[in-house]
Amino acid sequence: MGSLNADIASRLVPSTLCSCATILVYDLVCTLDQEMLYVWPRPWSTSTALFVFNRYLPFIDTFLSLSAKFSNISPEQCLIRNKAVGWLSVFGILLSEGILMLRTYAIWERKRSVLLFLCSLALVSVTPKNSSCTYQTTAGHFYTYGYGRPDGLGCMLYNASSILIYGYLLVMLSETAIAILTAVKAYRDLRRSRVPWILKLYQDGMLFYAYLLTISIANVLVPLIAPRMFANWLATPQRVLHSVLCTRVLLLILRRRRVATSEVPRTTTSESEGSGMVFSSVIEASSGIDSDFGLTTFDSLSSRREVYTYPVSPGADDEEEPGRLRFNWL
Image 1 (cartoon, rainbow, N blue to C red):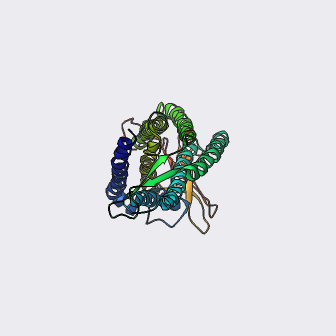
Image 2: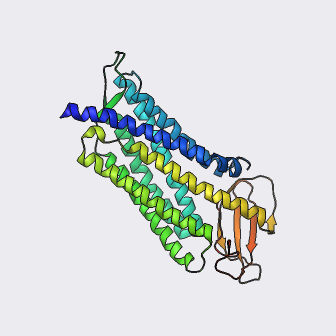
Image 3: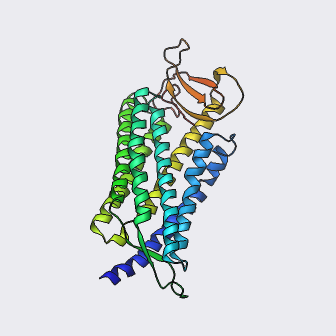
């Protein structure tokens, strides 16, 4: 039975990694035009760094995992690569969770209570997940398929600690809390307005949560019901899915920001040197017009504050429904 499981794992795990690499490359090809249009023309800023790390770090750990499956390496080298992949994956997932938290903070109009809750959630998630990763990367045991032989390619995990389950549970907890906050705000906002891009933002957010929840549940169940050698089978798919979906969220907001800054007249600006918009929210502009809403952006590097107002116009089916629920936080 053990040899049968090893034979299945020797085919299933590399195939899964190849699928993940294919998804990364395919997503890059499909959205590269948007990236070139909405990301790179802007000055380098915090949001640019978030985008780059979120999008391109998965290529490193995914192809590093692939190299371990198709190289003639020793068990010790397998362990070293596993440590590198493990920490890159943890960093990447935490980065993606941070992006989702920033988006949630923005749609809640930067409320202090939401900020405190998200910070507490981050602390609860980060420390135990780092501890579980530290233990897992040192406690895992590997074997190779005939190290030193021409046909002895790849290494396989044959024993893993069940502590990694708690790491996946913490990811589920964080994502569920973010989804609940998003759903509550969507219920409040969409009763007042049906702006197409805001509606898409909320719809995508809940759909992405369903995807991430599904694979998180699978990552909890696999170590419980499958042999230990399959414990990390779905770790890379979860990592890749986080990256791809968060990239789509960033591109949607950046695209909306470009439209807003190119089409909306600037009414209030405090100028200073520097750039680097991090986030903004929907506020009611204090311009004396009760029906106006404004987009406020804050520049973290230069303390520049800009307000754009959107006069309300009638018509529920208008493309942009000016004056309602516009924000962008990058």
